[in-house]
Amino acid sequence: MTALDISFPRLTWNLWLDVVHMFQYDFMRNAFLAGTALSVVAGLVGYFVIVRRQAFAGEALSDVAFTGAMGGAVLGINPLAGMIVLTIAGALAMGSFAQRVSERDLAIGTVLAWVLGLGVLFLTLFTAHVSGSSGFSGVTVLFGSILSISAHQAAVIVAVAGGIALALLLVARPLLFASVDPDVAAARGVPVRLLGLFFMVLLAVTVAEAVQAVGALLVFALLLLPAAIAQRLTTRPYAALGVAVVLAITSTWFGLTIGFYSGLPSSVCITLLAFVGYVGVIGSMAIRRRLADVWSHDNPNSQLPASGMHQETRQ
Image 1 (cartoon, helix red, strand yellow):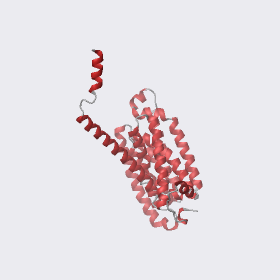
Image 2 (cartoon, helix red, strand yellow):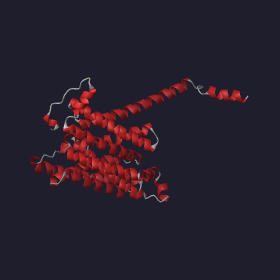
Image 3 (spheres, one colour):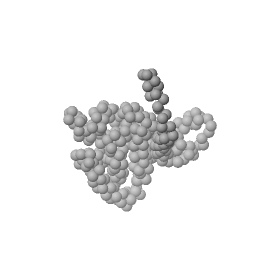
Image 4 (tube, one colour):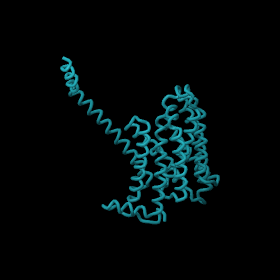
């Protein structure tokens, strides 16, 4: 049974019964399984994207994924295969062209300009010659269709996500060193350039996989917002990785649930929750800083009693 074959039920006050009812449907079980796996790798990879200041690369690769999917549809091959192949090629090109951090944006922009032109060509060919005889839709690539993921697709996503997570955790320590201080890392023998290319490949595969759930236009939110929140909440790298994963999973689970009971697109719900969480954290931190400034202004000697007590003790 697919999402199109049922009328969505209404949420009741018995939340446990609602959850049980939701998991009676195969497409929801597949969506939760695939969404959880994607959220884990999105949280892990997204944190390193922020630390390495490669947010532009993540956004650019989502556009590359769209071009790859359209190219696959035009050529008559699996759109997912087209996405993975072209995103990896684009990631390697971006990483190879940029010798230094200062050149990174120029390299990404160069590759992106070429890929977007290619995407327009594939979209034109697809619309003119393929769309009428294919079940593939460009809208699906742009906005995702996590509720239409089959059991086989979910299993593939879990396997690929597991491989990405394992590979990233194996190189997490040297990659973090190379991301924070590449010059010192290179001086100590860390293969900075090789690690950078390896990470770009992991990022490319992550983007290609996540596009199936939230789409090329919205993958940026799932990839970066949980990690950005985690970086605001803690300065410890491994703790931040864990927080980013938990936040990504939470956004996905609640987004799927809201989408199921409201009929809204699940991808939109997932990204909207991530955005609301980010705005909430940023806003609360700004309010706390403002309150701290007001308190310090109104009570300039609020910390003096402790030092005065020490002075009296010395006397």
